[in-house]
Amino acid sequence: MTQERPLGVAMIGLGMVARTHLLALRDATPPLRLAGVMSRNAVRAQAFAQEAGQVLGAPVRAYADVEAVAADPAVDLALILTPPDARASLIGPLAAAGKAILTEKPLGRTLAEAEEVVALCAAAGVPLGVVFQHRMRAASRAAFDLVRGGGLGALGLVEIAVPWWREQAYYDEPGRGTYARDGGGVLISQAIHTIDLALALAGPVAEVTAMTATTRFHRMEAEDVAVAGLRFACGAAGWLTASTASYPGASESIVLHFEAASLRLAEGVLTVSWRDGRQETHGATATTGGGADPMAFGHDWHQSVLEDFAAAMSDGRPPAITGQDALTAHRLIDAITRSARDGGRVLIEESDP
Image (cartoon, rainbow, N blue to C red; front, side):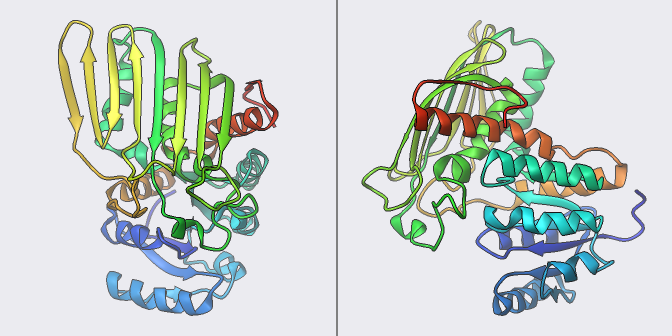
């Protein structure tokens, strides 16, 4: 598409991450225009619209409902920031109206819901992107370049760790950590970012044996800890540990052991340890919200996701992170959940329901 004016954005859902996206919109290049915002809480929508107008220096509308967003010709792109239980019901009418969709993770509460969202957008012929901003770090991009470069040899072992902490107050918010609103606990709400990045680098997992639990540190319906043994489609072995019960919380990490070198991603830095003794680093140390403050991170990576999505719309290409890409993480989370529930090994097929 030819961009004759700044792309118009509607922000739907005004929870914790909304201000991060507001700052990302403010600083995006080329400029993006926030046409309006929407929340199930009309008072919150009006207040946020006023704040956004002050931040951006331009008036921002407060929409009454999704039908108003769908009918607004000033909206090219809907940015979905709601809890997972609201995603599909919003994306359906927006996609039918021809609005491009960029949504926070996860695509849905379950693999089936995620697949439904992907199918809705495909049937409507609109772009669908997912905010997996960890892929946009300088360290992650350097890791992608090394993996794609072909000089690392075969992958043999993958270590994925998410040792995060959340206070009980975090789970005291109505619906948080429930299957009805969020679709689960640490796996789908926190670890999904690290899972997505690890799978984008290592490829899909073919087989899982797992357990999950809710520790004594939290009163919540879903899991706050998960442990899984993994066999990747490429033949590599590996494991995943994920927790929001690991006080005081630490950075997530991904370690990929190849024949020629080991790659460690942690705290925004990639450390490459070559088998011949050389070592190199890429990126810069950064916080990611692994401790008690879930918003302890900047907006630069979100800005990169928005900029890429806008460029993809203008260039007529897929965004860097498509809905189809996101399904790989959903399939692994679904397999871990099934293995923990039923016991034993779960095989993952790309078309697994």
